[in-house]
Image 1 (cartoon, rainbow, N blue to C red):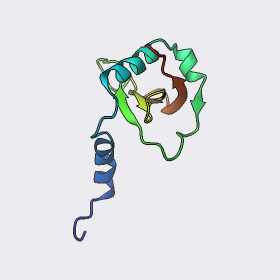
Image 2: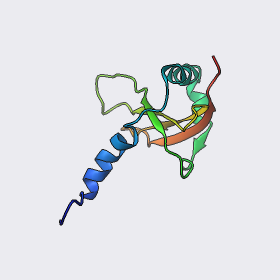
Image 3: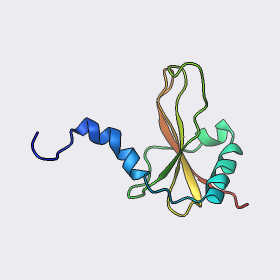
Length: 111
């Protein structure tokens, strides 16, 4: 390895931190996204499965994973909010009994 090159693994680990370093959502926007998320049922979310996220968007990530005793049984849940905060996507991480996936978009309800 020469110069300042990062190994691919280091890039994959650090990239989300750099992408989220400058939060663009203000507290009221974040609260509206969270309220809209809490209003959804699992059936509503899973009915909007995506093959992939839209290209070219940078998302702010909000971790809404439920705290459980064993990480091996649950999946992570992250809300992905594009600029403007008018809609969001849901990312379910992989778990021991389900593959991960992307769902959405879902509108952010006005307060």
